[in-house]
Length: 318
Ligand code: SF4
Image (spheres, rainbow, N blue to C red):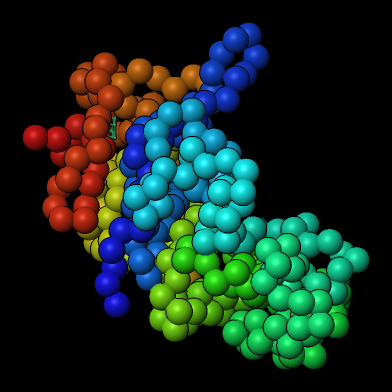
């Protein structure tokens, strides 16, 4: 299978109006690529801009600046029916499957609703199609008659994935899709995503605040801080090759049985500033133990350190 780039965000910025005529910059000049049959993980604390970014990928928000190219076409310019058709190809699985479903709908209705909306099946075909979709996510086909409240969190998330699969998308965006689940259930959902990727060549964008989880399934992992991408590197190298002081701090703060739990747990110094008060220069300066005078006046650019490894930090700029 080729792993060609299929979705590319170029210089994507998103600003929201705030009180007193100010602007909140949720994403600042983000450049990221999703490749066919690969997983792009995005990690960072709450408010880092990762959810805003993926909402732009699926067309739920429009960027203030920049373009998002899907097979070379800028999808930020799509409107009406063209935008609706594009949504078939990029689907989303939400964090809270409970809130995402209408509690009065049975599983058969939930997973086949997108197919009916696009006129791809007749109503008489719903049960057979729903059973086929449940089989893909390893749920018993009898579950088509269940309601969301009679299922566990992990089962509901499988229904969410089945619904996302219904339109045979090229990309599935998982927005904190495993965060509300127990660790063992998380692992089984991640195994399912990997299996679906291998069988169907689907690309995933997986966002989460858990570095250990994201690196375990990401071919490339992007670290975001206050709307900026500060490091991009292959997931399997995160534990050994991560360079940015913020990535290092995230790794140091992990309390997870997935990582080496004999290591001392370190917390990140102080709090992130408000996204309304991002300092000039490096956004991480007030929490960085390596901060230099240059960091306070000049914002570091994301530069390639090695193939597939980029860092935005003056410690590594040439
Ligand atoms: Fe720290 Fe300076 Fe690097 Fe920012 S640019 S992470 S303040 S060393």
